[in-house]
Length: 599
Image (cartoon, rainbow, N blue to C red; front, side, top):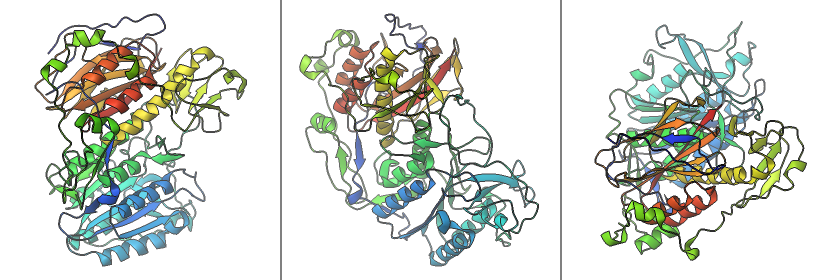
């Protein structure tokens, strides 16, 4: 353990809002980052490890008739269905909006039970509004409240009361699948109660949540489906994995996914990517329950800016470390970015039945790896300096008072900007009185005048790209103690896990786009021996958003490390993205998580 303070003094106007304290090291290798790579869906299929069929029922509801409509649940259902079908699953039934009335849901899930054979794998997924009601089976829930899924026609009238499905009813049908010898993966992209730890800035655009307030039914005409075999709770099932968007005390927001229009459910998006192969962390062609849970949990945590922590439950007889959720078979081709191909000296493609090929090792002679001190003073050759980041979708910028004239002179370096109204789904809202910049309910930068807005816009584009890259093969990282706004002098800890035998780079992108290298710094060892890294950070001015980025790899990334040292203490968020695109190795894992501070 290193016991010291590291204070990074920066020129005026280029301060970062955190100071690194001592780090508790536990790593098997330090320094690296992750290259854009993914499985080619055309050459890969999902399969059942028991050799039987994979079947699915997918539900998505936006168009509620009597309660607040949602914006991304149908897109979630479409995404999961597309992923399943692209991975070779033929028996997929989808119900969206008006199709998902109670009679249709019960009919289709009953028909799916009838089609189910021994050893089948069943996917059940529902995205929409949830709530809670007093439990009907006494003692079935720890807090006496049962989860409920609302259907499009629900209202608190006698007729409308029928249009909902109880959590106990889903458990009833899951038991029927299990009695037929099947295993089940149940995805519930809803929320059932509670609030949020981090407040939403009142100047922000309205956020969408998948929850309705609790209600009272004076007349309830719902006749629940049940029988004597029904489990009392999820823990009474034997072969089922549950993934829920949040626990019963917090809310599930609809989020923005980089590169995708509109809002989505982070859980559904993460599950769709996991099905396509991103959850196969060790590339052995088998996705264990642990891999599935860890991958989806990290992707949701990143995409929601810490607002959302999913709940995963496996049946007591299951062993998540070894039980296989699903397999990936057929010709698997690893797609690598240009940087990886250049580093490995090959196209990096291959086909192994049931297994993804291991990425080529990148070996460097000892003499080519400079010391950290030397790397800190190395200048990037002019021909190697990354150019400006150019992305297609502009950043939508609004003023709180609706005037667009403020932004005539705002010309970011890396991304086009589009002036819109504050009610028109902006990416950033600028307050002309306080000069604060707000994004998705959080202040990302305080006291930013018009002249400095371009760096915040460029930073927003860079964070969008970081989130996209980090979804492909995420590194497990958490920010402690929680997602609340942090205050001056408080300590926030960055905790990386599962990094044994890997190298690590850790850096921060402040609200104004300033880059701050956090690890390795000074005499930090390039290699460590254990599997975790815990880094304390002290919060200070300037306040706003801090995007902590971790990159891990099996080998030390000298070029990327050198580039980050050159960008250290500079507003260079776009250049960092270009460097990642250029230097990421094929085996890289990346985490990108934000926390927020306030005066």
